[in-house]
Image 1: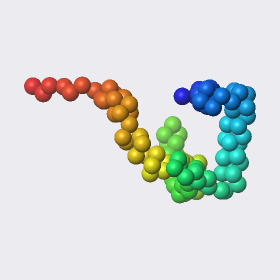
Image 2: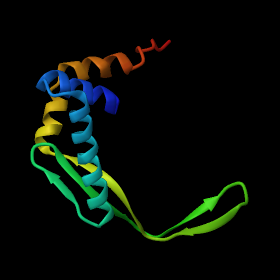
Image 3: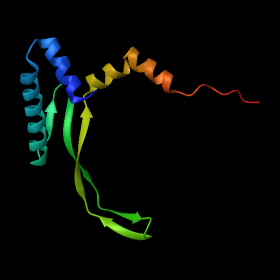
Image 4: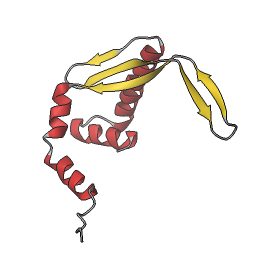
Length: 110
């Protein structure tokens, strides 16, 4: 699902003009990005948390040059879903159907 699909679905469900929904969604995303860039985490009860996750300093390898490079500690944005959100996904019949289709068929052992 794309941002445009989300905007269309919200507009259909609420009856609000797509341009207004687009402005609202863009404003929400802007607030999330700006606050996370300022070092703040965002907590949305029943949905989840947008958090800045700290990555430790580590040594990585550049395979093509066969050299070691140091990656300093840094922060990356992450999303942690709420327990209610996780339970909704776990109990979803549609998700279970999709997971079963993605599994390869059992092969017979000779």
